[in-house]
Amino acid sequence: MKHEFTAEFMRTNKKAAIVIGRTGLLVWLVVIAVLPGCAPTGMRGSLVIVGVTAIDPASGAVTRNATIVIRYGKIASVEPGGPLPGDVARQVDGHGLTAIPGLWDAHVHLSKARASAISHLIAWGVTSVRDVGGDPEELARWRREIERGDRVGPRIFMAGPYLESAERVRRQIASDDVEPYRKTRWPVGQSADVDAVVARAVAAGADFLKMRTRPSPEVFVALGQAAQRAGLKFAAHVDGLAPQHVIDAGLDSIEHMLPDRSSGKTSLEQMYRWLAETGGVITPTLVTWERSMLPVEDASRAIEKAADQRLISAFLLSDWREQLGERRNNAGLLEYYRSMYEKNLQAFRAARSAGVRMLAGSDLTVLTARPGAALHAELGLLVSELGLSELDALRAATVWPSDWMERPDLGRLEPGALADLVLLSGDPLEDISNTRKIRAVIAAGKLYDADALTLLKKAARDAPDVAVDDWGRPARSGRD
Image 1 (spheres, helix red, strand yellow):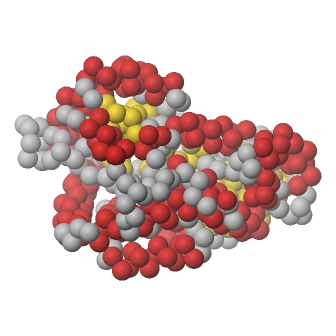
Image 2 (cartoon, rainbow, N blue to C red):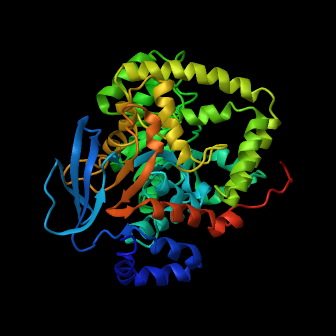
Image 3 (spheres, rainbow, N blue to C red):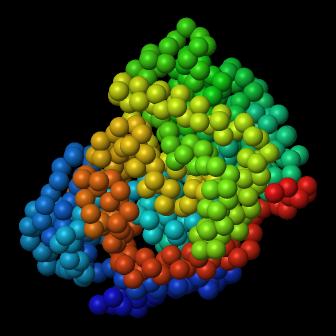
């Protein structure tokens, strides 16, 4: 049974094998292409899951003993005890399992994580990501490869580059850091620049915009207004800004932390109400704060464990060690993170009470946040630290990011939705940590059973970028 689709997959993916071979990734990507238990989207007949408990976060409906029929990459039906269609190509026994929509990680940096992370994400049930800064040319290429079926990975919705203040970009390029900043950081110097920057981002394939640092509130507001004119949503860091700046810019997504309560006439509470009314979101990345508060020696052990188990790329290993060196050289940083975390937790809770939606994001590539695993840690923190219900935590990683990206065909278990699902051996509505108990993943209608997921993880560990840094530049100063 588990090899029945291999021949058809190879017949329909000969061109992909040629393309993969030309990129020098044949050894590990062809392993992925012929995974046992991987049923292709366009297979003849339906993929059917029987006897499963189906959770649709959009409606909150729980359908027990459900029959889920998947056809041509979409969910055809979800019915309790539903009859089997006449064109069953593969049947999966879902008794004792729970089906949820494929998960989103709403704050990742894939370029820094590298290609091996893309496979890890699928293995952890992450079928869509919101990439908030990287090399736009590379991200667009990976997205095309995934869409064509040449690469196994999540759906990529990208901001393209990080937009930064021009002075910040100059300092980054002049630094000894391992990241090749010229590929990832675009300067925004003054308000007159913003329309040209937005047009360039659109041409690069950006689905939305992300600003990290800005030279002034005026430029921030101007960029947000330029994004609106271009029909793009705007995500940003807002530290150092006032709540009124967020409103004036029409900001759609706040990342990491809230603006300063003390500046300006508009209160945070007024800003929360505005966000709730306009569909704005907050991506708190609690796991980022948690990892930032790790003692240096604990972080060091986590880094070396990830290196020993080949769980991250060689570039990311260098980047983490660089981050650790910065931590060692700044004795007050740990206490700063602790105080800021408590301050922002209170603000996040107040925002949620005001009706603002939260998105689950891991800030993949922050110190010790591993691909996929960190998203599940974030879900746990949304429940334990922010007090979200298990259902709302699930929504934060399914329907809410789908709605933010204006993709109502994602994040749902209902007829017509795209077939991204995760089969779990536990109920996440009873305990959100059960999202970790993954038995199978369906991504774009392709089934990856337990054997396929094991091989997918092995292929990620054996990826070329795990052995050799394929992206970074050597640090000139020899810093830790």
